[in-house]
Image 1 (cartoon, one colour):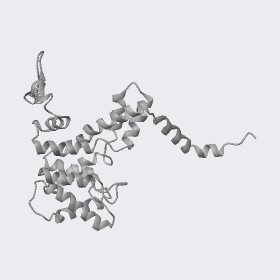
Image 2 (cartoon, one colour):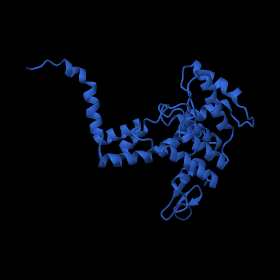
Image 3 (spheres, rainbow, N blue to C red):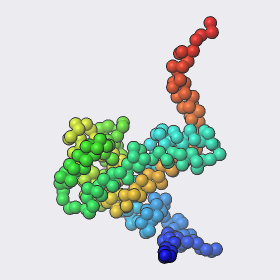
Image 4 (cartoon, helix red, strand yellow):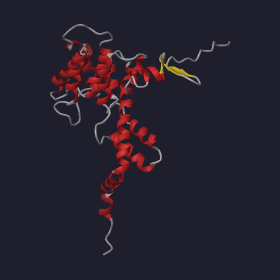
Length: 265
């Protein structure tokens, strides 16, 4: 029995000898000089140019994720560059590989959690009844609730209030942001610990407000953090720290061996 061959198709773009067309727009005349990097990212995800409010909110979301100092992903990128300075892209890729359920990739987890709890936006002001089962489910599985709490931003992630304010200004302060807040409040009440909505939780909720598929939400972090990691590689090339990190950690980790070494005196 022969199976019908599926056609191969892309709706993103194409080019010939004299032109490049992306999402139905002529690249040189309709995109270059007209769209900023965030707007281009939005178009890649939606197939259309954002309006002014979407542009402002989306750009704020990705800018939030560009940089956060000497984080694990930045350290990995710098260490990889130390070993392979000829491969900037390899160093950036190494840093991006660490964007998972703990760092940055929790955007995806937060968005999925919110969609699972509320597949369609609800108009209710009080969403605590939806928040309770979400918190109960994560706690019963002994899993971290994505998008709330932070290792050292306590009692509040300073990025979150600004994202919430921008959401109000642009009209994206809808039910998913309210549900994210309700989940945070429910978790704090049950645990007795400060568990505020963090930046990735706010961005995950905003992704839902914008209608993005939860499976692509981690991609916002990948887009943004790549920019930051390029900056770290540039600094590493000028003011290196990777070798010092390596030797310092190696010395500390093996100090007990040196203490056991008999003296030659």
